[in-house]
Length: 87
Image 1 (cartoon, helix red, strand yellow):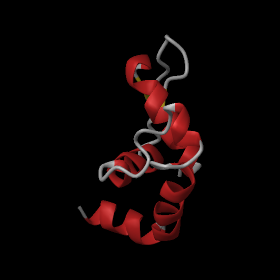
Image 2 (tube, one colour):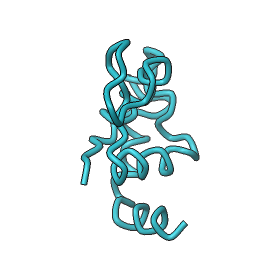
Image 3 (tube, helix red, strand yellow):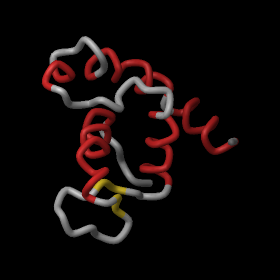
């Protein structure tokens, strides 16, 4: 829990701003993408993506450290929206 709290504190501005740009009611969201942006679970997912270098798979073949292709599309959109960077 301490890691998540530290992540939220460090990225508070980005966590508040990105839902306005990509969340419900935004132009990108009107196309059915970015469903995870603005969800309560977003901070947990982003913290895992950044601190553990977990990346969504963009193809049917999963690379090491990536999430399966079935979950990859929504996570890829989330990573792009928040400009996820590995530490």
